[in-house]
Length: 469
Image (cartoon, rainbow, N blue to C red):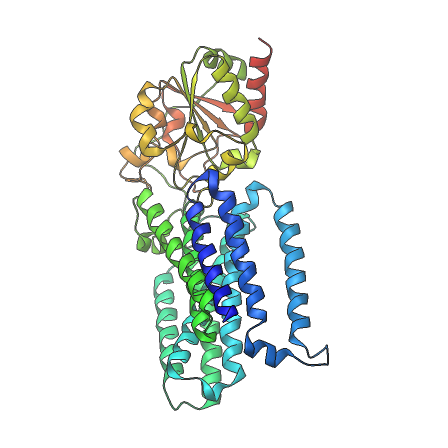
């Protein structure tokens, strides 16, 4: 009875926590409530009757509580140290790894539950085990590959080859076939074990194969989708062991992750099917419009003189701001501009950065006032009235090719219309392409001025110019 009440309380805290994540002011409290709910759920699980009976032994080497608490301690230390040491630029790959570990945990729960008593597995439970192994394995290997691409340990480009879709189709059909055989009643235990091992192997390969043809420009959506899959795997694992809190928590993560995935796909004007199977970014994109004008570069001193006279300035952050860890000096520059009489805004594209909300997290870390943060739909109509737009490391999300070049892979994607501002400053390390490998027409436009160099150093220099007035 007490355990059930604890699980209900944990579920309520999960829901309250997710609700508070929709606003920056309450997000920290939402995280705390969700973590508290998970702590209550974990503690309650230790007092389940079945757990107490199976782990209550005088031999401490055989006592499950000892090993479980040891695992909790080790995991807690690793989690605390890892989260404290990771930089904001490494947050996307950290999220990818967490998704993968969630899928792996569900995978192991399903596999070990089957091994406990293969003869007692009923048809419905068998179906849950098969689905959990499928989704958990896909989430694990898919997330590990996403981690490799995001951390640039392997190429971030989409990797495609002849017959790839056929191979993926064969893997999907093979996985379905193994699941059908596994859930059939009357199957010999040895055959069932062999089938579930084959299913696990196919699913692990399938997860890798699904993410392989997805390029770095699509990674925010991929992370969201893998997050949803990890939630589905957790919910299915809850069915297997009849644990209410796992079912509710997994369903919440699965549903919210899928909603976010659909929202981000809509922001890119692409479908999930196109995302998974188009091979976007596999090769450097070559526009049929021919080469654009040579970008014009200016110094920070000249940029300062223009900023000093500006009446309105909008910042457009991208992954380059995260790489340079420039969010705090960006706030300093915004404050200097406001002191000089300029109206300052920030506009964030839904898929800017390499994970959902990446830029929002960075700006919140620097305590940028929420009132200054605009959505793409809010800012675009006012962009022609803006004196200067400062693009910090963004590429595809401000590329005019999305609107006027039908040969571009991003054609049709809604963008931040920075090019409509009277003047555009683009802060960029060099003349190379962005992470997706697409040329940006904005760089060669007549109202665009390039400021080459590290974004943090450039903005610090601009702040220094204001300070020396």
